[in-house]
Image (spheres, rainbow over the protein chains, first blue to last red):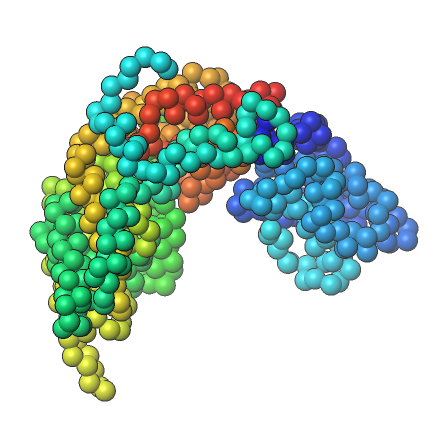
Length: 138
Length: 425
């Protein structure tokens, strides 16, 4: 198997075919949508916070697109639970590739980080740091 | 595979003219593991995006830069004369290639997109207004669709789209309904870069001329792959790019009927395109120089000349037959699988490309895996996003063929698609 196919290790394909936390939370604390126009990937993330209004309690995602973008969203939805908003804010690209457990080629990195960017922008809007109509495009 | 295949052209000797085809890329599909990339033969099937460049064209560029590099039309010195003659000759050669009357009708631009914009700005902004319509097809490339869309917004003109039917053909009855006295321009793609559909441009020319409108034909996919005769077509404008037909990047062609180009104002102003200038006013050079402001694409024009020589040596009829046979073969091979959806009309009356989707595998995932097999294809919306919306898919995978491609490479594509199928099973 070559480098490109390495991106599609069992874990990625498993999350792509059997996405976790896929769906919508009714009346979430915040929700945000983003797109990766180059692939046509789309991810929406709904988040509920615990009573401290800082800790992420519940995450759901929906969307469509390539396996990398959708598996990353599924895995991130698990990862985010229990994290604080400031921890989410600090997540970098390395954290995403580490979570995915595979090397992502430069042409596909936007697919991998889409869900994280949607979650971060959604949180920033919730906290009043970004305008509510800020579009998320990676 | 294995059996002797006869081609309408000598693929073996053609391949020897393209050193890049010997490159190895992708992953090692026999051995698992990282670090095993770079040892799979290249199967280049992305020719509708750009073609590879034969030695003769590269050598023409080297000769220009080593022997007679100079600016054109301004130096009296020897090198400038040689460069000017070569640059002008390139216009004549292109005119001959597409059946235009002469160099007056051939304007060099950067690419097909710029040719389109030249007409949209220089003609469209002046002539269009409320009550006028510009008729496009549903399978336009963004180069045409977006350009006319924006010009229409500025001028108050309306855009109408000729339907593409289920089979992927242009609905000519609908075209006849749309084209009327309000139609100022019909701008259509000659060969769809997504469906491979060939537009009956001669019929559209008759339709729009009956109502005193103009026809613009986007020849980006047709000029490289079939004989073109703009006079027989009776089109008012025709545009194409050098880099899709063995030429260098950075050169496009706009053909326009001389009577129309004469009446149009320049698109870009500056040096090269003026006859005389005072502090108060300026007057313009003759065609085609009126539309070629600034230092033009000299090296690229010389490279395009060499590319046309190369292609005509092979013969454009043979190129068309080869393209149609490969596309038809790929269409049939891919259509055998129930999990593959192939777009556009079947048969050999199509351009040399096939767009498809493998069920359950996004086009970008598919192209990533095909790359491991050395197979270079295009994945995305191919600059026809509204058409993909109509097809109900976000993206597709497109294999496109040229003079050096073989049936064995189509087989390699089908094998690689099966590899992706197994991986995602």
